[in-house]
View 1 (cartoon, rainbow, N blue to C red):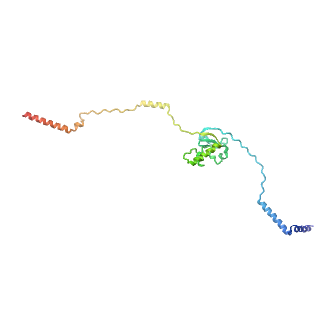
View 2 (cartoon, rainbow, N blue to C red):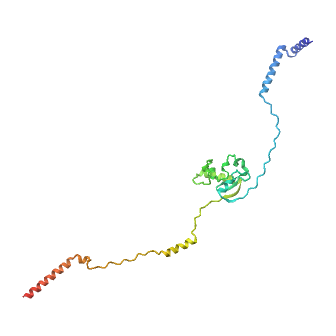
View 3 (cartoon, one colour):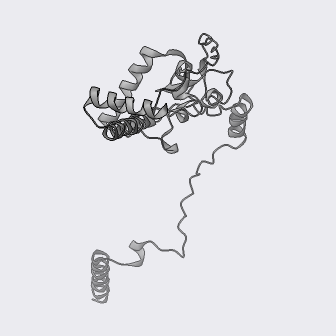
Length: 238
């Protein structure tokens, strides 16, 4: 019975395909091998995963106006406390950047600018610690222009919530007691006025230059006097 079926199958293969039974089965085997080879390169898409529940983010609180604060007070808004907003200053103007937490929050590319006046760092596009300051002295025109672009961007995107208070050293004013003590001390110690020293009176021992050094006139006068005395003595003898 089985032999009869095999003979019938071979006759049918030859009649319908024109191939011998051996050639037919060889072609079928090659076709199956090619199918599995091609299906191995093409991966089937993974089954759809169940959707994970997405945590709903709480809405951001409205920006709070802080007014004038110091740089030390600004440092507490650097993102270390998640309950406080993210604040950043440019040219002394403080902006609330909480809506861009992925950039200015902890782990973000600009996180080191938060809680500071980073004007110099933004102008120079620097991430060095020494440039994290609001001092923009010595910057070139291109750096100042870049800083101006940053300021326009912040003004259009974020809300200004305050300004940085500049601390100016105050000189100690003189007290009332010290001002009263100065005139009293001036009255107690009057300025010494130089007194005129009396001129020395000439004495008999100290001779003036006229008496000490005889001139030609005095010598001639004494010579004439002696001549007159000789004439009078000769006249008396006669």
